[in-house]
Image (tube, rainbow, N blue to C red; front, side):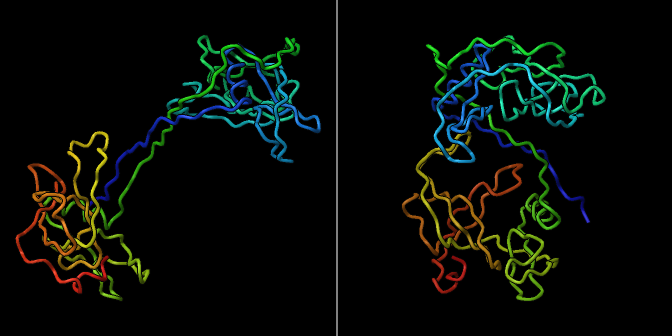
Length: 313
């Protein structure tokens, strides 16, 4: 059996959010090297501050300054920091209860090794050289054996407050399509489309999943389908996608390939978008070196009867 495919993938997008008065003051304070918490009705101080008490749901607005020094309440050693993390060398992830706070703040601790870290150790904030109003204004924590820092009594009022942030959300992972879809992808490179037949209901699924979605039993019998098929449903796309060099409007459709019992999707070309219809007979159009059809075009055959594809809508 051919080796199962796998590839590294990343999903990344800029996440933009506005800040309420509490988060605005907290991040602006970090920019000014001031750590702020919020006082609850029963006298607890929460750091990081939140707008509503997680216990009572009371609205919270009473900002108070806490010290940039504190105590490690728990920790874990990070042997291999990842891209975008505070430190690019092995470090500890720690929960630190800052002096004056009743909750703990999660951040990285710069330490030479796990033997140098313990619950109860004293630490302090190491401020980033360039600060812009983000949690990264705290570069990390570092071991500290001095007295608690003196507070300035800051109330959380700033002239140039941060009102919004943009953060890059990113997920790195390795994707494997599995045995069945690996065979499907390899067949596409030969300009063939293969599915797998369920040994119980005898339906052919394209793309194959390795198991029948109806019966739940494993599938292994490969069946070549198409290349022609029938448009079952479709939509007209009027918004141009980023990094996709296709002029709008265009049509994306579900296409039931001949011999398949599940419709796959593809773009329809070679026909005005307003002439695409259910039952239209189409065939794949390949470009040189492509591993999948660029689009599907009309074959010129009469439209398929509705009863032949109504179960595949």
